[in-house]
Image (cartoon, rainbow, N blue to C red; front, side, top):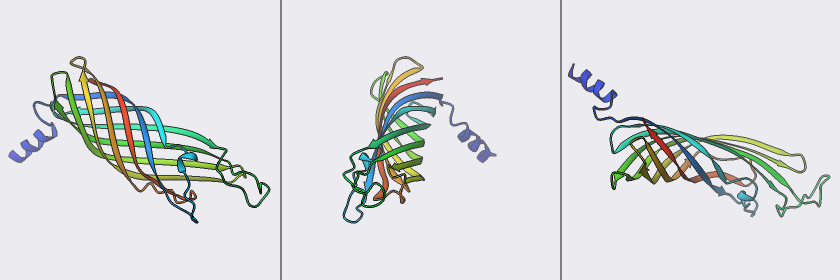
Length: 212
């Protein structure tokens, strides 16, 4: 009976639990592309497809107390890029002797779950630290001016660590800024010539939270 009471207490968090909150961040996700040499040539991948993604990220969280909370968030963005100056020349086919031109459409979806810890500096201001994990879906379509195209999608994971700050405007509303590093696992793009994939990324953002 005592164990059951303890379990129910844990499931209901604790008597001092503060409750749910929602938020919205505007974020910049900056990919660190892992470049691999092929036949002595190392491509500059950010010339072929975007390494920077901008967009809004909705957040839902639960605050256990004044110090700790857990939150989930989602980010998605699609970018298109054209490279008319690859420095390469077609050596065969109808475009032999002409410049190799590419266009790419890349998209990223990131699902995060993080624990957030606060260090209160004053009643209105707190420093924050987060750790957690991500599920990441990265899709790339690359087309060449000879009609050839590559389609590839990979699903990977990430380990997150970040720092930030929060300024309370009232009992319910706060402004936030944050920076987060994510080490990725499994985001390997084997089909794209010379590309090993996404090694890691940094996320910078700012937004607003509403505490119920």
